Image 1 (cartoon, helix red, strand yellow):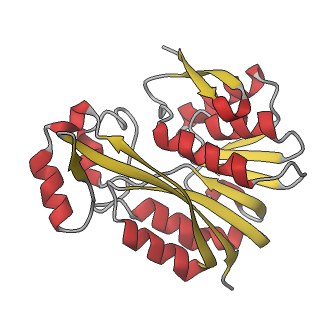
Image 2 (tube, helix red, strand yellow):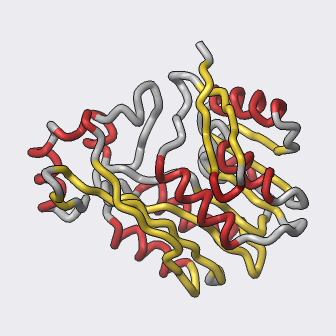
Length: 242
C-alpha cells in the first residue's frame, strides 16, 4: 500500500509530498544532509547528475526544483523503488532517466558530470536489527563498507574528466576504510557537512552489539545526555585518478 511522506527543504523554500511504501527506503536525516550539501555546492547548468541508489528519487526531485537546467538520471537495485520514483517524477513533471540495476550496471557507456551516491553503508549486523531496512536488502558487509567501497572504486570510470561524486558516511560503518577508498580513487576528498544525531529507539537496546562492533572499529558512537550519539558526514571527491 502506497503512502505519502512530507519532506520540507527550508533552504529551497520547498515542500515535497512523496509517494513511498514498505518496500522502498524512506529518506532519512542523512538524505536531507546530502541534499543540502549538493544544493550549496552545485550550479544551475546543463551538466548531468546521476542519483545512484535513488530510492524514491528524493535527491533528484529536490535538485530538480533548484537546478532546472541539469540532466537527471537515477537508478536503484529495487524494481519497486524505480516504480515509485516514476510516480514521483511524473507528479512533479521532472524528466528523469530512471533505470533498474545494481550499482553502475544500468549505465554502461555513460559518463556523468556529477554522481550523488545515496547509498550509505551500515554494518550488516546493525542493518538486520534496525527499522531502516525492513523488506529492503542491505548488503554492506560486516563493517558497512562493501557497497560504498564498490561505488567509489567504480565511479571514476563513469565520471567525466572534471567530475565529482557526493557520498555520505554514517558512524555505523568503518569511516576510515571508506575514506581510504575515496583517497585511492580521487585526487581530492573534502568534508562538506557533519551532524550528530540520536540513535533510534529500536537500536538503543542493542548496546552489546554496538560495543562489540566499536571494539572492532567497525562503528563509532558516543554517550551524551544519557543517549547514544552517532553522526553523519557528507563528502565530495573530485579529480578521478586515471
